[in-house]
Image (cartoon, rainbow, N blue to C red):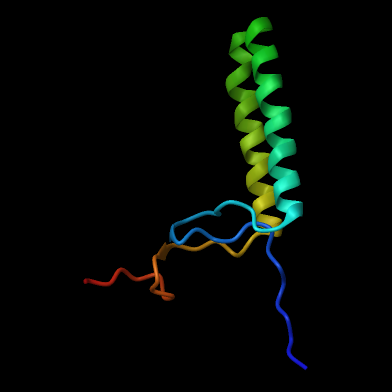
Length: 90
């Protein structure tokens, strides 16, 4: 019997630090719900109090980062195919 590791909603990016597009339906639901909340709310705030748009978007980005951190692959610097994160010369 083989042990299956955790299935991450958001895989690590191949280059750099962070996460790529979702690979599970749960990740897509989170991303689409985040977009469906952030975009209309930002537009509504812009029509009422333009100075509140920046803090609102910043808060929503922080929420998405926390979700990605909790459900995604552990973040670290990646340099492509090199698993150690070091850059290799061609």
